[in-house]
Length: 227
Image (cartoon, rainbow, N blue to C red):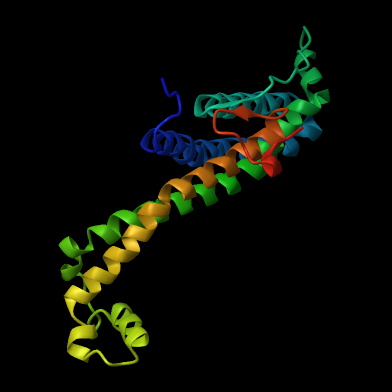
């Protein structure tokens, strides 16, 4: 039996990995940045000395979620070792001496959010281009034209034919529909490769910060692997 996932299954897995990452990172950023800032601002009165360990623990929770999501996508990460907290009132202060937890905080606040914003925007844009292009004939006629009928398609056609096509034809809805359909087909055909690249970008970034190098049923390129 062939265990290689189908193109649609692989695409669905990439979507499930890429799209939720933005919302998770947005929530983590909105929670961790104010908490960390509050901890620094109140450190002089010692309140912040207990808020800092809390921020690190929350960051570690989000880092564990990032690892879990990557494993669900198909990658494997070695679980890092964390320094345990101590006992008593000052026990949580031991977390402050754990570089691993500080790296989790750095990743979840300054690295993951920009990367996952980029992957989310590109994935949504590419998907909209594919679906919107191939269905343009159904809804494009209702768009306002701004005084000129389908200028982009007309200019492309005139450039390809040297102006031999009459303006009435070049600016027609039929030409615009065919042109937009072809653009949509291009986006649709390249969508699996684009989503794969976006998933690999997220995975490589996660592996570099949170793990010791993933192995996957969809292997990362050599440049994206972390020794």
